[in-house]
Length: 211
Image 1 (cartoon, rainbow, N blue to C red):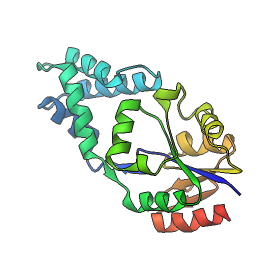
Image 2: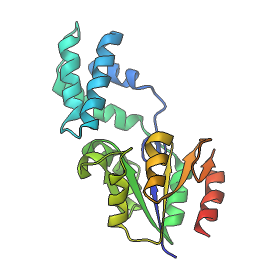
Image 3: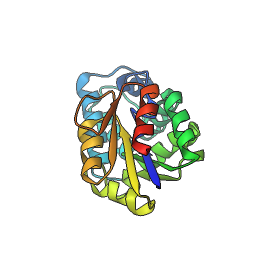
Image 4: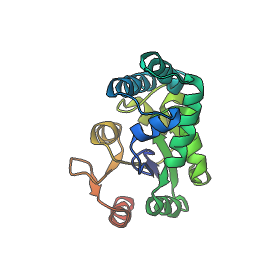
C-alpha cells in the first residue's frame, strides 16, 4: 500500500518563538502604533490570500504611508523576511518523523504563503532534502482552506492513501478530510481522524494510519 504524507509548514514543522510585532518593529528599527501594525498585518494577509506578488513589500508600503516615522518600505520588507527567517525554529522531533517516514513513503509539504519566503524556510532547515514535493499556495494559485490545493497534492503524488498533518482545524483539517485525506490535528480536540499532542504520540498515531 502506497502512502503520501503531507505536512503543514508554519505552526507545524516550523514555529516562531517571537511574536510578529516584535519582528516587524525590528525590521524598521522603531516601535509603531497599533494602527500601523494592524494596517500592515491586514494588507499582508490580504495580499497573500489574494495570491498577489510581493505581498510583504505591498504591506510595508501601506505601513510606511500611515506611520509617523520615516523608513524605506522596500528595504524594510527585505529586512523583515530575513529577520523572520532567522526567527524560525524547526520542530526537530516532527522533522525526524518526516525523515523516518520518507524512507518508506512519499512525504511532502503543503502550505499557504509566498513562495520565495516559504522556500527559504524550507531550505534553511533542510526540509527540501526530505520532501518529495513542495506545494505552496502562491505558486500553485490555490490556498487552504480551499480543497483545490489538496487535490493538486493528490494529482502530483500518486498513492493509495493520503495523510495530512496540520495545526489549524478550519484551514488544515476540514478541507483535507473533504478531499479524501486522513488527518492528524496537532494539539487539537476536534473531528480530525486523530489528534496528537506531541511528536511521540504522533509517531504512534501515524503508525496506526499506515497499518
